[in-house]
Figure (cartoon, each protein chain N blue to C red):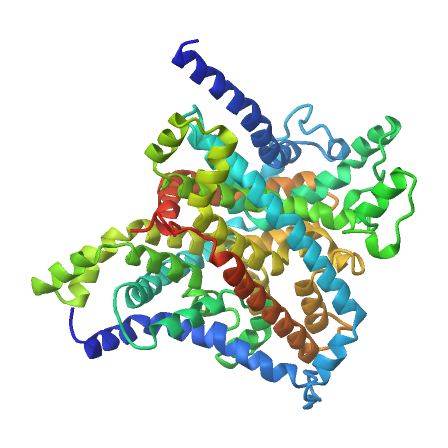
Length: 274
Length: 318
């Protein structure tokens, strides 16, 4: 058998395993789209595809839910969180990954320990803080508590540690200060890790539910996830509408992910090496 | 390089934003929670109770039940996600058509809105009763009603199907919890795949080629070369997944309202129930449970570092 033929057979076998697995993973999404186009009567059947697609479901949901406003609130707070996380992780990563100072190990350990704190532990005290600051129903409450993120600090620190030290020594010998080194040389070199942090921060903020539920009660401050969640509860008998709403809520994130996915995966590769 | 002193100054400046946020909204509240756990936490008549909450917790069957559920959740999701993730990553690490597409497909559940994903799964389980009825008609021993509402243990049902009555303690995780586990694996799988693919791309191709020329079979290659070289990545995933599994809340909250009276209620769910729901034991008690959970997570992470950390091979590091 020729090498090409052997390769071809191996590839076929790989697809034989991957395709069913992929279908299994994709099935809920296909089911979601199918159900969103069904009539109410059809939703009780397991077969995921409708007899004739009811595109009107989407129009009905769009009329029912002020998705425009939700999208605005969510996009604004998520973008702000992302920007803050990138900035704060870049600083912290530089301090932990490049600089040498006393107490560095202890503080890094403390940072990492924060990752293990269950969210439910800090929910009550944080709510009290927000009350005291009069931040309820403001963007501050949605943004500031998430403006730094230990996972991102970890990714960026690892990435900085991977840079050859002679880079820094050479730059400093040439009279380059910390700020200039960070801005002109180091930051661009760790940009894959920064991109990954940005996407994680954006997703985390976009998909969060419990925190916005606790700190906002004004309808004008609802996020997409909150709007969808209350819609799911209110319309539990109209599954076709719930699914149409879900599809609308998924689209922005999915579009962003598809557009950024190469960057994202390269960033993971650079960030989680060791 | 600058003097040590100057470096420390620059470091302080660089750390300021993250330290402020983490201190005020993550670490500070943790310390505050310690204070809360020593009080009743009831609004209006808050009183110092010392360690009473912790003492009560030791004799609280609901707490132990929630801990058992959490253990099942960790055992049921982490190894499965790692194993299937490894399998998919190895297949995707080959030079095949549609590689980028598959990679994106597997990662999508991790990205999408948890509320939307839980809603679709919940409804799928609801409608699948039709399929279950068909399976029962074929003589398969499956529960006919909605699996998501089935509070009986998986092993207990399997035992029954074989005509054996199992003692209550050997009932295993409830079928409902297994459904939630499945959704959790579905969500986390893509994360494992992407991280493992990143790790595999670091394994030098010539090492594999050399081993193959030396006559190493696929299985030997995996056991002796690929897995050891991947061990830092696997270790990282293990640590992250165990922490995440212990903190699981959203999927359970959306998919099984009420925690099915202790059948799917993890410790995080019990915390929420104690602190925020009517008839709960109060914020003080909830905080005590939360801190015990935090203690368990930290000690388990340390144990993993102690036991497995030594066996992790950092050969590829520059």
